[in-house]
Length: 74
Length: 263
Ligand code: SF4
Ligand code: SF4
Ligand code: SF4
Image 1 (cartoon, each protein chain N blue to C red):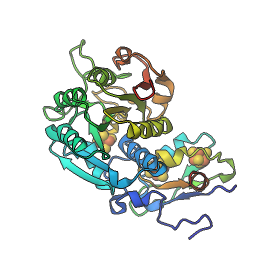
Image 2 (cartoon, rainbow over the protein chains, first blue to last red; image 1 turned 135 degrees about the horizontal axis):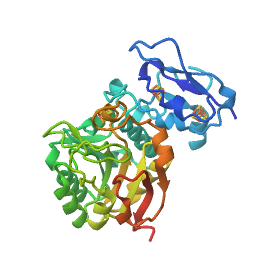
Image 3 (spheres, protein in one colour; image 1 turned 60 degrees about the vertical axis):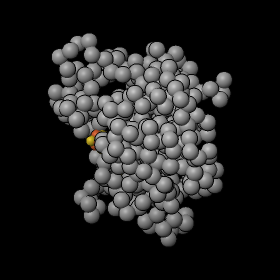
Image 4 (cartoon, each protein chain N blue to C red; image 1 turned 180 degrees about the vertical axis):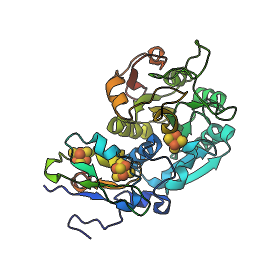
């Protein structure tokens, strides 16, 4: 039972929704911008993730994914 | 490739997307993107042939871009014909699921008669209506006269917003639900139910346009994007649709209000 949060930096538009919805503060906004000038999130505390999958479902640009959930749904 | 098996630039739902057009052109954080994400996740999860899904959108308003980002079969129709076209398409092929993405401009402002007609004639379509509280965009760029939580942009104190779930019910819909962009998982279940429903399904998603409501201006108070839904929405399944007015009340009643298959 492993969790991995994968962020596709170049798709991110920096809306911070994933950071806002995460109830356990796993994610935070990075200081480094991506090529489009937006600051994507990074994984701050992976061990706190309770695999709710909200960040993945709410990202408007398909930039974030939580791997454990995918395995379960298959 | 990393240890969980996905490559650097891939998302599990990428086969259902036109990845060239992502990131999308919608404003950063707009609810339309979330609804599209939810729709794609719902289809991905269901055991449904993607060849049997047909997206119809119109040329006006921000939901008009939905088809550009999805690799489903799709059509873009002039705004006042979009519901009539979808109804015809649904009638032509038995197992085709026609999904319409509509917003205020191509729905309330120019298409409400076709909506009633489609409901009354039992059209086989799924309407996903993204209520971004913009209205009358053609005539003057202005928000809906009265929106929940917000001040009126109109001098007419009696102006009220439209109660879409009620209209859908009295038009003869088979499935009616309303969610906000925060209730994303329930919205996903609703989209699944609507895709399985034989008949006219209507899902309203409350997702105010950020261009207006993230800034304090003459259209109202600034809203806090997700907190406002968390604090103000109440889930009431099977609530009579008469009570679902968004008028000036500090609450959004969400839920599944009608599902004839389940009755
Ligand atoms: S899956 Fe849930 S807990 Fe984990 S990072 Fe995403 S929102 Fe936070
Ligand atoms: S929700 Fe998506 S687009 Fe928005 S900041 Fe997070 S990863 Fe970026
Ligand atoms: S925030 Fe408003 S203007 Fe921007 S994409 Fe969404 S609906 Fe359109």
